[in-house]
Each structure stands twice: as structure tokens, then as C-alpha cells.
Image (cartoon, rainbow, N blue to C red; front, side, top):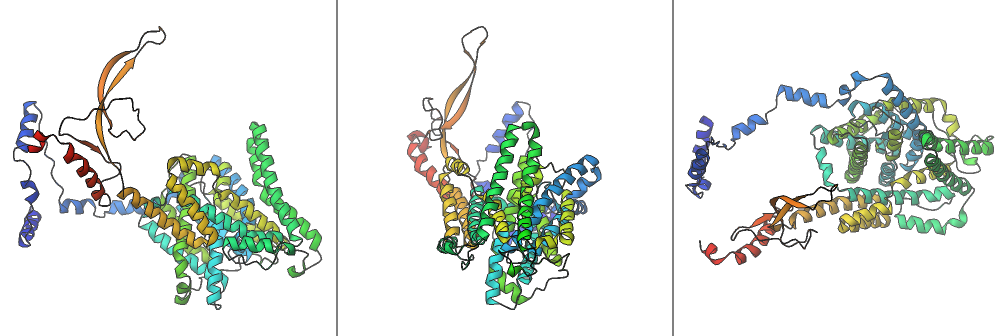
Amino acid sequence: MAGNKAGRGLAKAVGIDVDERYKSEPSVLLDSATATLQSRSIDPFYETEPTVKEYLLEHRPTLAGAGRYIWSLFPFLDWIFHYNLTWLFGDLIAGITVGFVVVPQGMAYALLAGLKPEYGLYTSFVGFILYFLFATSKDITIGTVAVMSTLVGRIVARVTEAHPEFAPEEIARGLSVIAGAVLLFIGLVRLGWLVEFIPLIGICSFMTGAAISIAAGQVPKLLGVSGVNTRDSTYLVIINTLRALPTAKLDAALGLTTLFLLYFLRWVCNYMAQRQPNRKKTWFFIGTLRLAFVILLYTLISWLSNRTITDSKKAKFSILGTVPSGFQVHGAPKISKELISAFAPDLPATIFVLIIEHIAISKSFGRLNNYVINPSQELVAIGFTNVFGPFLGAYPATGSFSRTAIKSKAGVRTPLAGLWTALLVVLALYALTKVFFYIPMASLSGLIIHAVGDLVTPPATVYQFWQVSPIEVVIFFACVLIMVFTDIETGVYFVVAASAALLLLRLAKAHGSFLGKVDVYRVSSDVSEGGEATATSKREAFLPLERRDGSNTSVAVRNPYPGVFVYRFSEGFNYTNTAHYMDELVAIVPGTIPAPVAAR
């Protein structure tokens, strides 16, 4: 009461009448409602308005709330104490299966980032080790991905051109720490819901455009042609590659056959899985191992051709070269103000890609496997991984679509499966680096093109978007074309701007509808006895008077009572569409009110 008196006193001092809005209400309204309820022996309930004090008390932090928040930061505590042998077996199979894929992919994607191949293995190892602590998705895998690696490669090339004093790995590690810190902050303050503002069509268009750009950039290495700047716009890369075709080398034979073999093996496994449903799981695992099998096959061919050399530059075709054994990079990354200033313009695009890829993939597989992820907690996971990963040589990492799909189909049970994958990565780092020396570069390019092909949105999906919202398909193709004729970063900014513009347009230009009454009858009949249908009950329903909603136009819709209008908002009533809704109401209501009603 004291607080209420103080508030009224302050309002009076500054000339505010706190009871002004009550003066316009009919004085008999409350008395009439009370009398009606009491006449039917109903005790009236008067809802009180909330006060500032009540609001502050409701939202004040509590010790119990702080405890729940801290517990929510470590979701593994909810399931780790129930871990059993069944879960262990499922995680072991899934983790090892993903491990056979992540080793060749990690090295290939590191080359996309303009780094040495071992940095891809460092990044993959850290992602698998740290993610399970904060994970709300059992399926997703954090590590090197094609789109993020390509973006990092562009940033590294741009920064080293302007600042030669910075090494590529120094730029990549510094970018990871800063971007991870931003993501960690967003996750800790639970702002993951911001991701919902990016529509699915925006994500699909971005992934499609990025996949086309990545694939086009790998074709020169696939064919062994030189003199093509793969950092140019995609259309220029395609044109320059066609011009350089006469300079193709022996690499083309390795690259093209690698690509053909990868697709052929996938087709065979899918075909056999359909022909032999009882062995579907077996064919899935065989298909998953095709990446490792093909890379090992061409590594063997390369070794047979170059086994007498010790310098990769003397090989008959481009090979990977020396990969250091073990973890050669450890310790805090060197981050200076000059370095941050150098990559700061590209930081928003980096953060966007990290968020979109991870959240979109984790949500998709959550729906597929009947569980719900926490977007804010997932941002904590990738933020923590990207902040501390560079201490072991990692560069920006996020969720991988291909490896997540493999992990899900392999029957993963918990995020702990990543530890088994990390074990395989460590084994590769310490025992297989001499084998990596002979991996053909053209085969790695074929692997990348094969992997990013799954990121292209199929025409059937685009057609479904067209059926739902044609304007979104326009945005889809606009984004893809922008990424083809400019770069990935411009496509990122266009997706964000177009998504925001579309959202605001739908809110600001939302069309409501005036409703009328129709009679709805409940009809029943005994079909088994061939009886006639009879109406047993009737109720009233409301349909739009304009009949633009696809309802049956042969059904007669009656206007409500004279002077009564029923208006349905298609969107929430807020400041963006207030004027538009009021214009619709004013345009219809005054001209249709009967004269006697209007006179009152």
C-alpha cells in the first residue's frame, strides 16, 4: 500500500491521472455484471491488475532458479547416471562408423580453410571431446564442415593479403576464439530463440549456394588444372576452369574416377538395401565406409606410383604431402587487437554460419528422432568448443550434416559416442600420418564435391516451398544467384536481410477478415442398415465473408446482427500492423452500420 501511495503521489506530482482510463467506462457496467452473476447464485471474481512490485517479485532471481540454470548448462547429468551396456554398444558402433568418415573429411576440409591437413584432425578431435558435456542432441557431430571451412579460407586469404605478418593458422584460431565467445554469450543469456527469425527457405538457399560455390572451387584440383583463382566468384571460377581444361593433368583421371566410384558405391548400397530389406543395416554400414575405402584405394594407387620419392613435389600427380604426427599445436592462440580488427568485418558472417548450420541440423534430427533440442544450450556447446578448441589447434567448427546423418542411422544412443570417434582421430594422428603422405589431392577434391552435393536443395523440396509461399522461392533463387555471382559472405547478409524484410512485410501487411455465421449440422446415419442420414444437432460457426480462404463457396454465410462485426486478425495485433488493420476496419465498418444504430 505504501508503494502504491508513493506511486500515486509521484504520478500526481508530474501531472498523470492514473484513473483517467476508468472514467470512460460506463458506470453501470460493473454493477450490471455483478447483479447478473448474483442472480444466478454465482460469486463474482474481480481480477486485479498487476503492480510493479508484483512484477519485480515474479522476476527476481532466486537461489533455486540459479541452481536450475547451472544444472541446465550440463545436460549430460540427466542421462549419464543411467548409462548402460546397451547404450555403450550403440555409441561404440556409431562413434567408430563416424570416425572412418571424419578422418578423410577433416583433412580435406582443412585444405578448404587454407590450412594444413592436420588442423582438420585437431578440430575434429576437440569437437568430439567437448560437445557431449553440453549437448542436447544425441545425433549431431561438431567438427570441420565444408561451408565453414570455405568461409574461413576466404577470410584467411583476405587477411594474409592485407597483413602478411599473420600466419593462416593464427588467423583461423583467433577467429574461432572470438566467434566462440560471442556464441557462448548468446547461449548463456538464453537468446537461442533468435534463430527462429531465419526461415527454412533462407537456410536452404544459403546451403545450396554455398554447395555450388564449394563444388566449383574444387573442380580445378579435381582435374589438375592450374592458373584458376578459386577465391573468385563462382561464375568466374567456372569460366576460368573451362578455359584451362587443355592444361588438365593426370590428376583428372584420379579425381573423376574417385567421384564416379563414390556415387556408384552409394547407388549400389542404396539399391541393395531396397532389394534386401532384411540386410538394410548391413548395406548402410558398407555405404558409410565408402569414403574411407575409396581414399585408401587411391592412396594405395598413389603409393605404388610414388613409393620411391620422399618429396611430394616430385610426385607424378599432386599428393597431400607430409602430415606431422601427434598434436603439434598446443597452448593459447596469439590474439592481438590488429588481428581482431583484420577479421572483424567477416565476424558476423562467421557467427551466422556457425549458428545456422548447427541449429538447423540439430533441430532437423531432433524432429526425426522424436526429441527436442535447446537452441540456447546448443549455442553454449559450439561456443565453448570454439573458444577452447584453438588451444589444441582447432579452427571454427560447427555441426556437420553428413556425419550427423551417418551417426543417427548408425543407431547412436547418447552424445558420448563422440569419445569413440575422437579415439579414432587420435589413432590416425599417431599411427597413419605416413600413409596420409600419399593421398592424392584430386581424390580429396572428389570427396569434397561428393559431400557437398547433399547440401543442394532438391527440386521437389523447392516445389513444395512454391506451393506454400511463392515469394519465398523468389528469395531462394535470388540468394543462390547472389552467391554464384558474388561470394558466400554477401549471400549470408542477403539471407538475413531478406528474412527480416519478409517477416516485417507479413506482419505489417497482415490481412484480417470479417466473419459471418453459418449453420453447421451434425449428421448421423446407420450405414450398415442403409438408413438415411439425419441431422441430429446444429451449431453456429463463423467463416470469412470474403470467401478467399478456400472454404466451400456454396455454403451461405450470413452477416451477424446489425451493428455487430466479427473481425479475425491473421497475425498478432502489434505496432507494425496497427495502422493497416485500422485502415481495413475504418474502410468497412462506418459504411455498413445501419442508420438507427449509427445514430445511437
